[in-house]
Length: 469
Image (cartoon, rainbow, N blue to C red; front, side, top):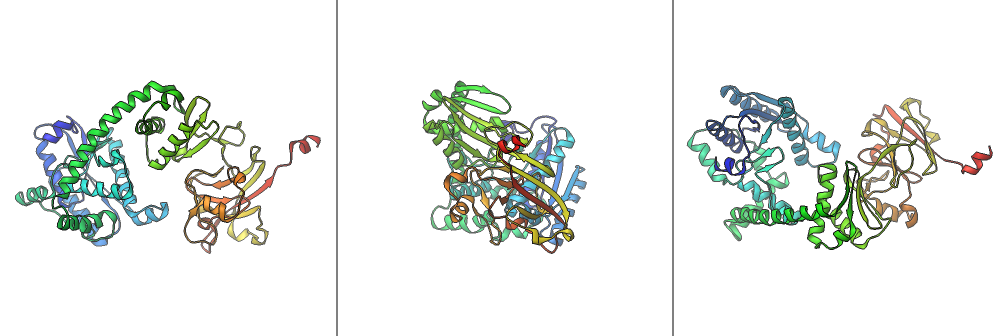
């Protein structure tokens, strides 16, 4: 209750969606919430996700949680997902896919209720695991904060509670639980840290490593909070223009700041523009600061999430990239969306014809440098033409795995001055074809292919020739 009061993470009449696995941590949180509800009324909604990886055991857990909810007369919501399938499809780890699916489901419930918060049972040991993961991956002061008691719509009431306290709470009250055996297997990074690394550190270096890391997170949080507050003041003082698509910063004001503050200003600018830092890594922030410091007028940096950073004389600009149809006027960074049919791209000097055909109707002998065929069902979202982006990777036809696009250009001996101009045929996730060079292995036609995208690229004739005709 002290944590709830101190951080104000639950308020009267809140809708609290509790992610309940049936394990000791989430079951302890459920019964703690029920106790707290006697002092401040709020709604508890039970949500369970069957990740589709443990067969009958997963069904047992689902039925267990459903029975718990029914016995306590609490609303119950459940879903079954293919975590491994989604991970493969999206090219992410099973852990990442599981998290994405869980929180997506929880937020669907909140949306149906009109508002709410997601309660998860992360505890002090989970915080230690998170810090170790971030330290090994590479992190700054903000990363050392670990998880907060509240992040957006997610609340963590048990974050300062030892795992042994949770186990005692469960044992003393004889609260039933189920065991997820995968938590005892070193199959995921977090599991390896929990099962192997932390016990090794406790045995050989520091028996109180969990408490030590928790104190580190508290200290980092204090330092980070001060720096963040100071940075926001500086950020607000150097804004020249701010709207939904673009934020312009004053160069002279930016130049005067310490490098640590500059990095926070860039993060804050991006966050204000697109409401998330998902996909934005330290390397991106460092690159923007470096270019802004050098005042490289005309230099454009392509960032994830459809934004660019550029310098224009005394203006430092971060803006959303405009995805445009080929009929619109040119902009400084061209990303054209393509339609099925004929597309004229004057900026690239290209005419691109797209056609969806049946596999059986294709004469593969007509494949050439300018005519390519792709498995249409593998294409994600829209189809676009753009130039290379920071961090682009490519899976060249005939190769296993991806490589940096930069390395592919070097291997193919593509001239440096051509690399920035080379048109890329892409969908919303991957490069499909480096036009004039190689296609992607990911979109090749197989025996199971039914629908095929035919793409034919032609060079536009110079305007003088067209005008004469």
